[in-house]
Length: 141
Image 1: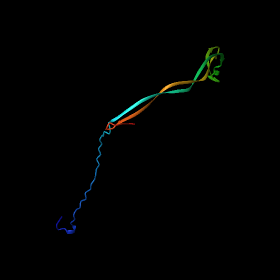
Image 2: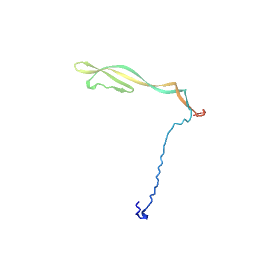
Image 3: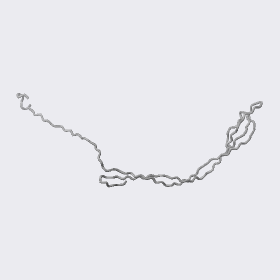
Image 4: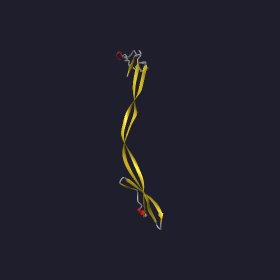
């Protein structure tokens, strides 16, 4: 400052400190006990099964027909009740071509119910955990 300046203009500077805190985080491994022991056992117990099963049996019989039909009237596979009729066709040479139904397959399905009884072995597991603390004491969960 210049000594020629008036007294009022002489001011003192005031400094205000600004503080900022910082956090520092560290991780470390801490041994909280001596370990664990796990016990696992498998138990088997029989389980009875009693269930209905369906079985289809078929009977195939050959039925001779030996009938000549025009080409446009060739029979298709059809059902007659529970019986599936499958025509077996054969071309025969005559003065003109005709279809002769040589035979039909008559397939009858019968359904019957059977009981199926059996015993199977099922398994289940049980687990227990044994913990050790620093003093050697144990606790089981």
